Image (cartoon, rainbow, N blue to C red; front, side, top):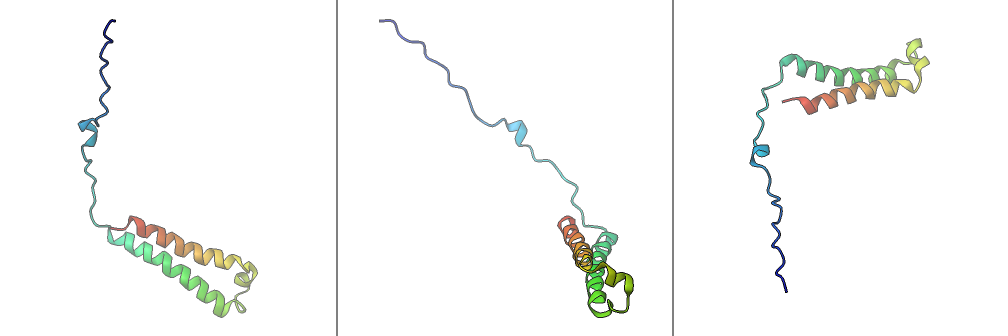
Length: 87
């Protein structure tokens, strides 16, 4: 009976060239970025406070009704999303 051929198994090792770490420029965020981030959060808070306290006296704001919540929380969410890029 003839002997079967020995098959070479494929090598599944990771290519070491693909494991080289990439250097990323990771410096601190500029001051203006932090100011804008906090500005968005405070503007959203101020929008909601003005809506609750003075919506009866500001006609265009009372006409927006529930959209005031979207505007106020939307501004705060933009500020919170900016915190993910803050270093």
